[in-house]
Amino acid sequence: MAPSAIRCGTLFDGTGAAPVRDAVLVVDGGRVVAAGSAATTRIPAGAELIDLRDRFVMPGLVDAHSHISIVPGLGDQMGQLRQPPVPQALRATANLRRDLYAGTTTMRVMAEENFLDLDVREAIDAGVIPGPRLLCATRAMTASNGHGRAHASFDGVDEIRRGVRENFQRGADHVKIFATGGVASSGTTLRACVYTREEIRAAVEEAERVGKYAAAHAHGGPGLSMSVEEGVATIEHGALAADDDIALMKERGVWLVCTFAILLHPHGIEQGDGRNPAIMEKMRWARRVVDENFPRHLATGIRIALGTDSVHGQMAFEMETLVRLGVPAKDALLAATRWGAEACRVDAEIGTLTPGKCADLIAVDGDPLKDITAMRSIRLVMKNGVIQGRDEQ
Image (tube, rainbow, N blue to C red):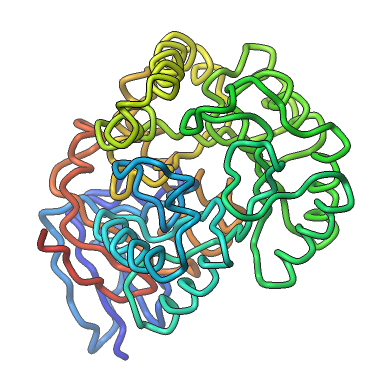
């Protein structure tokens, strides 16, 4: 395949450098080989020219927390996870297509049953279905009485060690621990900790033993603080995190993966479980706490990434919410690209448009640095140097 030369109206390369007007990206073999001003960047002879001179070009989005088979708007998320693999895979195919065409080129999958995410990843990599690059957790570590339980559960240190080892043997990239209750289950609370310190540490140790890492679903309370103290790399959600929790996360270099859409977007929990009083009471409370506390937490400079948590195709909403909560637009773009790649430990390959990285990019209509809602208008998606099809819906 001949190299490609992409003329960009504006190039935001994700490194944190100022955007470059009238820029050129040269792509060859699925990777970026050159990037810079059109006046100084040489275009190879015979390169295919792609004209994006009226577009804002930036790295592909990294959704750092989602599930491929869940549609929150249908309600009963645990029930969806308990279904047989075929209906789950059919939903996943539609979900991932929507994510890809909304600009997500990499997604960290935060647990599926039956190792479904590994099978779907194989189908994407083989070109059978379109979708983002998947980083897979496979089965989550959750207690028999914990949030997130569908089929699999793991109680006690020995069961957790076995479960984590089996996950990595099958091809998992990381381990997911449900350390607290959640919004979308009526039998748990957001501050309740379902695991002991020793159980959390066992999962972390088994991940570190093979050069991987652990992520903890933790809204607040002892489950969050113990997870940070015992060495998890990312805290998912953190809706009820206290100031002391945020300070400890900063001290330990732990990432906060924000997941706003599942709580705040009309297609999130509210659409699917709006008639469940127990769930809606928790959700309204969590919404109030997010609006009250997150501006203060985000202003501390804690390391952040973004995830849609299955509200597929809504990374733009995640960025808009960051900006509404006081984060500069530039940092919102970084949270959705380079910082997400760093949180997922794949920044050697993706997250910036610099030589040697995978040629994952999107072209946006408008300037999201001036108006973050421009992220709703993505006109082209490239993954590994290949332009992806458009979703006509």
